[in-house]
Length: 145
Image: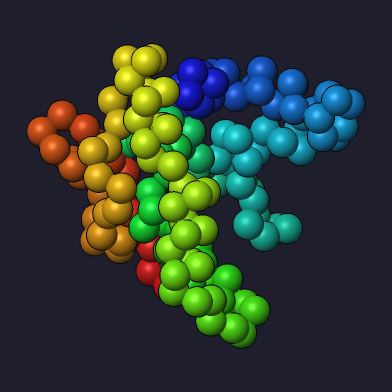
């Protein structure tokens, strides 16, 4: 969580790109990594890079929180890809095992970091930051298909 907070500071992303470029990690030049970390992406070979605000959120808006609603959406997409439905009880058990908001909340509490009280959120409802309660601002979740 502290590393995610550090990465949310744009000035730290050059250093992160340097670390990730080392032989121990990705073993590629940092100039290959930095555009993705900074949000300055080229979407076509002939285009100049364009800045995409909030391309990566590492900590802000509780972006690392393990929403069980995200797990449901992810497994729904997996089912489409494998062209097979997973048994509902197995899907539920898998989500309960792998997405552990209780552990996230415990660690966040020990670090003094606020976290959502809910395990699920309504998806594709908010096209801008919103508050889950009076103090915790969450990020936009609207993602047109």
